[in-house]
Image (cartoon, rainbow, N blue to C red; front, side, top):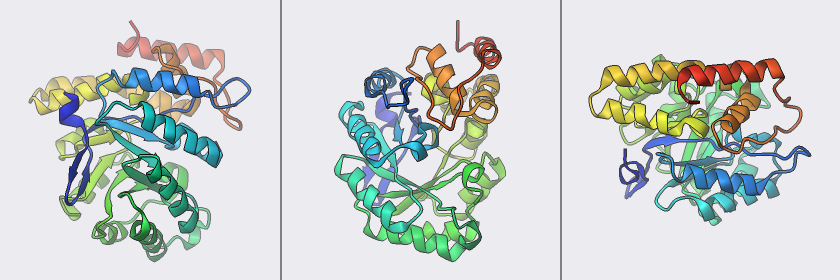
Length: 309
């Protein structure tokens, strides 16, 4: 799939996202400082991959462990080095609407195209539909850039309801959502019940191929940090009508995706990226590095998948 086909399309009714988008990992040095030079080298490599854009400060970026200064530096570097025409999305969600808006405004001033706003969850029992609708609506009312709702129950323990999503989808500055529940039935439901203009972006490679069959056109996939070309190939094969081949490739990548998400998490993602020639770096505490047995297992999984030759 060409960059021209996948790049952001700016329309009167908003921004449309196409193709595979990595939630960019943040390389840390052994002393846990951000290694910005490694981050730039990754962007240069991703610029040559078949990607539709970038997410800076996603869950796999260890965003919750970053200071505001580090976040803004990573956003600025992304905007400066990203390949022209590719979408830049920044994760700006914080617990309060006021602080989320403040970070969103700063991200916008650095050249970000859209903000990915996580559902607040600290006071989880009080995060009713009305509370979430009020939170996202406030941010969207005042944000200078479009908003994407970020639904990731694995970390927040909140799964946004269809009722809340339908109401939020009517807001002119809330243009879509990243749904990381990895539930194809939910993707199908959301796609059917919200307007066509409201874009559902899948957030897990485990449902990438079946989501394409439902009309999804973009995925923000942890796997694409080091297997972006393979993830993009699934979409290209699907769009060319090569459904069997697309599904075969999807199935071949499933064990890899499981390993770098649910089994080994961010440490596994970073090690896999390093094995594949990217700059993984270290994790930041309290996350722990992989042990030797886990490294060997992950190496074997990547070899079997064909990612390592």
